Image (cartoon, rainbow, N blue to C red; front, side, top):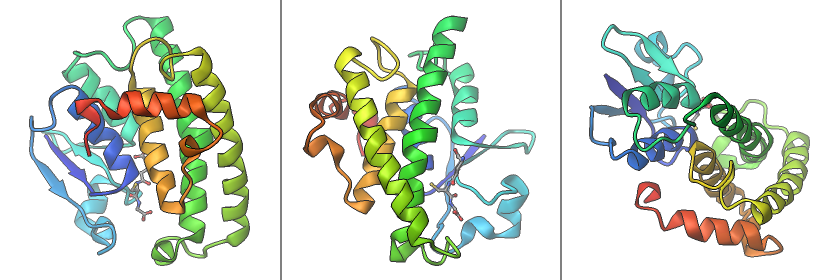
Length: 206
Ligand SMILES: N[C@@H](CCC(=O)N[C@@H](CS)C(=O)NCC(=O)O)C(=O)O
């Protein structure tokens, strides 16, 4: 088994933090892919990742598993402890619900904002759209308020314990720094308190 990942890229970081939380980051080999050097578009890599996305987990039989959450589902099966995705059908569903809310409504808006406005992304995002960036920014700002409210009633994103949904939010907040959006610094005290709590975890070390 081998993980193809990229440094300082949010989706690979979701898998890295997931493995770090499980104490398994060093359990199998990794290959670094440079997105800025276009290594993810190399035909050999595309054979594993047809959409040219990082990360990918290559299995012993040559299967390429992509989509960060799907990779985490597989890793949760291999390394069940500590549990990060739920122990029974209801808890699994609730964690997935919150994780997808974070990914689809916040993480993806930060991605749209960053990819359509940052000069470093001009090569990857063609064409860049200032209008798309603006709409994404507005939505990200609104959703930050939603998660601040959620964290006023819940210690962690999906409930009373740390799960994959916290990893996704942690990565998404870090991603937002690239567009200088730090909602925990103003007006969002619950997000700030949660961020301080999770940032202290060894598994989320940079
Ligand atoms: N939905 C995929 C997204 C993967 C993805 O977009 N990864 C980025 C790096 S964070 C990438 O490979 N970008 C390359 C590109 O846009 O050309 C996942 O969850 O893994």
